[in-house]
Amino acid sequence: MTSSRQKNCSRCIHSPRSTLEQLVDELNPQRSLTYTPLFQVLFLFQPASLQSITLDDLCWSSLETEHQTAKFDLTLSIHESTDGLSGVLEYRRDLFDADIIQRMAGHLQTLLSAIVANPDQRLSDLPLLTPEEQTQLHGWNPTHVAYPTSLIHSLFEAQAHHSPD
Image 1: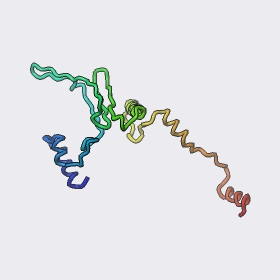
Image 2: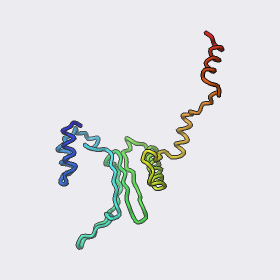
Image 3: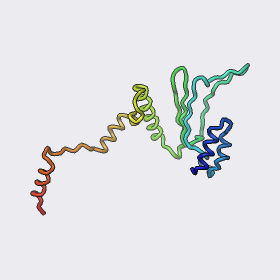
Image 4: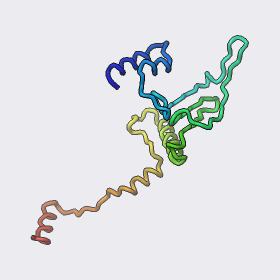
């Protein structure tokens, strides 16, 4: 983004009266019918306090619906309830295979389990790959090499003696 676009975007985001439509109008991004104008991935957290709302005589509650078409390339929705957290990954099937989404979910589960097990751990030290994937990755890249216990200059002399030309 250019500097003026960054300023406009920042101004719109921090303005409590800005809507997504106003932000899109202000930034005027190049339009395409294949994706949304500003973002393609959405993370949504729905706290338990928003599951139902009572206003005067009206009681509102959330209703889960089935979608046949993903609104964005990838959406992760986390819902909090008295039973804990549950989540849904919604994705465009023309961009992602079910196996890839399953691996993403496994990576998220690995990450969240590590955070719960050790909440003080540095972010850079948290695992993302499952133990099976770590083993597979190490198997693809065998880095252990058995080196002789001789000193380097001795090895150099032996090689020079073995192939003098």
